[in-house]
Length: 82
Image (cartoon, rainbow, N blue to C red; front, side, top):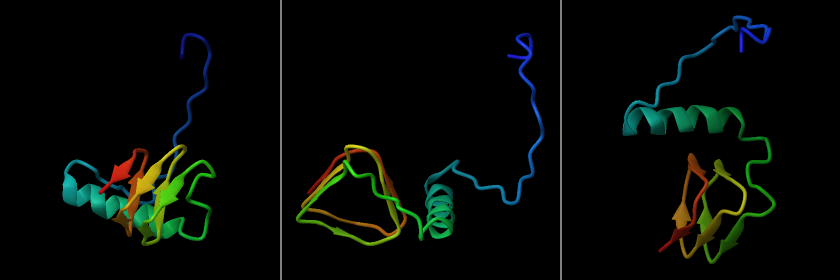
C-alpha cells in the first residue's frame, strides 16, 4: 500500500482492549457494548423468535435467535438455537 502512495497516520489509543482469552474477550465485549448501548445494535434482518435478549447485545445481519436467552454483552453473527 505504501508503494501505491497510501498515506498512513498514527492514531490515539484511549484504551487497550484485549481479546486473547475468554475472560478478556467478555470484558472487551462489555466495554464496547456499554459504550455503544444507546445506538441501534440489532440489524434489521435479524430474526428473533421466542427468545429473550438482555441488552446491550450486537445482533448482526441475518442472525437468527430462536428459543434462546442471550446477553448481556453478546456479539452475534450466527444462529442460536436451544
